[in-house]
Length: 209
Length: 234
Image 1 (cartoon, rainbow over the protein chains, first blue to last red):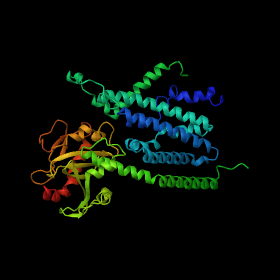
Image 2: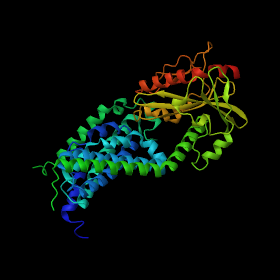
Image 3: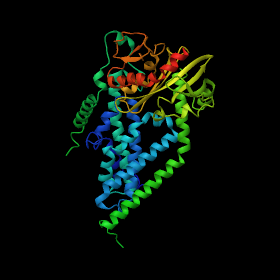
């Protein structure tokens, strides 16, 4: 049991949450971070689904890593991810139809998320299943965490609400406040991600080599 | 024995095995889950039709019974206004028709009874910015004023085009007239704040112009074939 949660494994899990965050440091998964963050809710759901799928695809690839022919490894990784995503989407459709309607295209988009391929190639191909699982969950949560920040900022400033609940009182609108339509555009997501990276780098100056 | 994982034979066999295994797995899962997912789709469609009749937030368990109570028939009509199939056995004829089955000779139409008043529901199919959009438009028994509307979408932009599913967007269609005086479809969405013809036009969603154009086009394309029937029954 101690071995399962050794110092190295903790680092594998925790690093992607902060100093090795997939979006902020590895710059992976930016595309979906721009696409699904105009509201908080899809951002949360997308973050969680990516977490689950990175976790499990990392485990599967790690289990078969020694048998995969080197020249077609990317194709094999892609097949595993695509199969997993398809199965998850079918399961959702059968047992959680409302969630699957809400996710609609996002489920399919997970296949193209660079974090998945990036982690499979960089970690799962060289490490055991348990470490790979931790790495997958860690990276997924690191990704989800940034999505939630960007989604919250964009929804609050762009539509004056969070998770669909109006937060900015009508009296403020009456006094001339108006929602910033720019925030709902993908371009603003890029700028917000840029700001988050800036803050993150300034906070972690010492830890950088 | 150490396998040479780089040999051509190994690579080809490996790829073939993986593909076959994955194909079987996917086919198996899809077959096992077919029944529950089809049931879910049917309930979802019924829910959308009920939503267009302003019966919203029905519990999933109650959808079927509520639908049976409200919908009288899912008939099939043609563009001459003749009823091709009366569809009184429900869920069988008009209900099973998807967007591809609709031709000028076969148009699904739901005849409903809400608290004693006769309503008609017309299914709408169109294209948004990124993918399909659809909806159901409920008309009063004069076959012209809107009783309620429901819209759905496949993949419109969250926060912009996707807001056609919002209640406030759908509610503004209530009491609008569908047809112009000359018999063409007049119902449409215009830029927010630029409604000139209050009887036919609704406010659009800012930032979602292309989805709004899609909604307007969906009205004119999907409703036009019903003209003869609507005129004959008002």
